[in-house]
Image 1 (cartoon, helix red, strand yellow):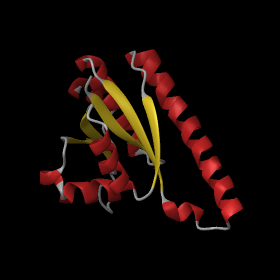
Image 2: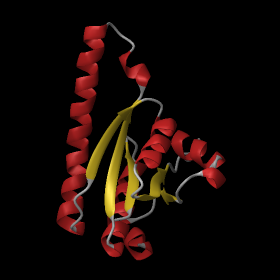
Image 3: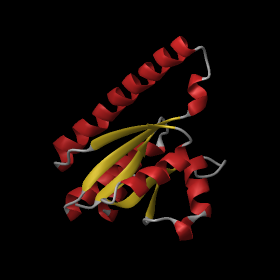
Length: 151
């Protein structure tokens, strides 16, 4: 089954990327894989403190994921899977795509802010021609109605 890989983070545009991935998966008979990446700089503390912070980050990710997962199950009949990785976000996204042959599309949300679409979108779009899967960039300000019409 082809899966849509979507990145879970604390950005506002993540919401539209999640919605798009779930709606496209539901309409095409695919699945959704949600990837959360914990950056390594979050744990540059004493070993014990770093472990506690890592566990707290995982708990926050699971809680955040469950909100999206419930919506996907209830509204789109999609049961997403969660993958948590630690490292630099762009390299971990590429590793996940490389390790999971079922991933067919990477879905990212673009920030509407003047500073650009966001660091992940910017980094991946620089290498767009060599990505192993198509990249779908969903505007963060796209309305629910327009998103539904596009999907």
